[in-house]
Length: 93
Image (cartoon, rainbow, N blue to C red; front, side, top):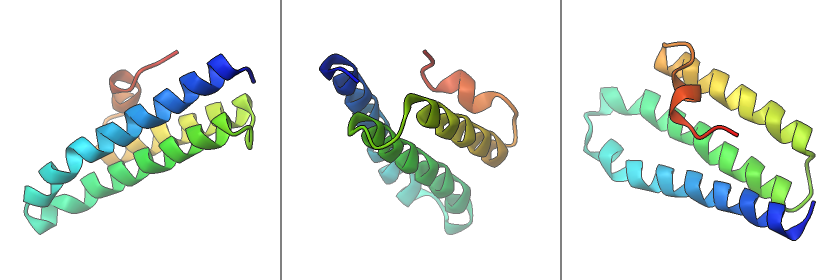
């Protein structure tokens, strides 16, 4: 993987980190019974950001990253309860 691509993957990880950070204060303000699903969704995004960093380091292949992205989107769809919702919200390539 070239330096340009590594930088792009690292930017995607930073975007996901920023997305999670922006939602943390919102989640803290919710009643306890409403926090769990949203916290789980943010955990999926944290793991996805980490997968992007693994790709930028060359520790996983592009194919593996795509596989993990697919699993993350499926997990988010299951948490949201609406098929295809996560894929429509997150940036696509």
